[in-house]
Length: 203
Figure 1 (cartoon, rainbow, N blue to C red):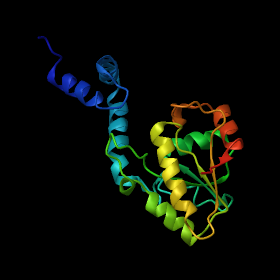
Figure 2 (cartoon, rainbow, N blue to C red; figure 1 turned 45 degrees about the vertical axis):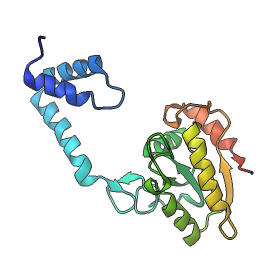
Figure 3 (cartoon, helix red, strand yellow; figure 1 turned 180 degrees about the vertical axis):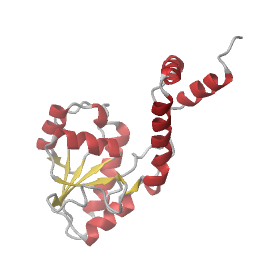
Figure 4 (cartoon, rainbow, N blue to C red; figure 1 turned 120 degrees about the vertical axis):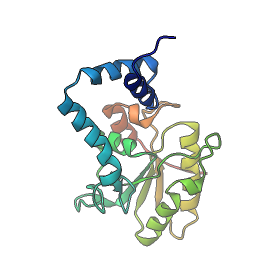
């Protein structure tokens, strides 16, 4: 079977490892890069290489950053009395784009999933509980995605917080987000309505 030149084929195979990139998309991207200038390719390669060298996890919320704390945790204007718990840094950015929330965040690094063998110890749940113990907020918003895994994660975290001495108010975003949808794909208006319409989680 006829194949592309080895360097092109290798690039296509590597691009296919990216989420959402199938064979045809990988081919289009490969040929786009082939037509790009050496300067653009060098800039792209440098940006990729710098990811691991310069990006780290925030020491407080586990968002991605380049310093000890992310810009949100380092901002004295943010409301430290509220912590919004999200699955991924991309969810944090989605909520920030909505412009409705002015508190702090905690990024779990995923959601509980027996299918993918993601356990509580694989997420930043212990760190969240410790953070609440050391500097108790007034409210914790559980903003995990409205999926089976997201709901299970929210319920697990709620139970851990609930048994703390003098636990904070626990709320869950709900209004405007479809069941089975991903937070990162929701539009700004929907996210803003979801934050305004959050409800207290009860047994």
